[in-house]
Image (cartoon, rainbow, N blue to C red; front, side):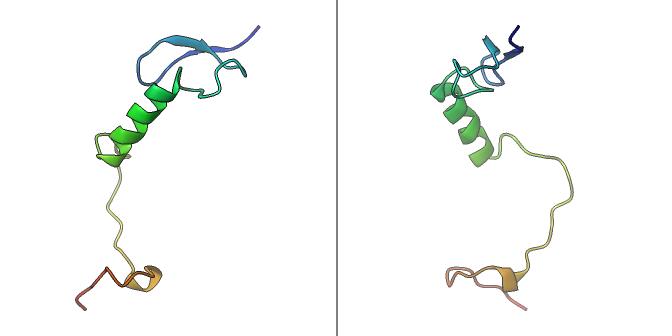
Length: 66
């Protein structure tokens, strides 16, 4: 028996199987909607904001005052 779950975006019930290649999403559309919500910061993981270490960024577009 296949495990059933709800799509995180639209709540449609799907099987956890090869039939749904975008699992846990029901479709590519729902997968992209979720990605857009993370990119626009609608979805966030709660926690403290971490300081940025300028030594770890290898990009001339970033400038930091020290």
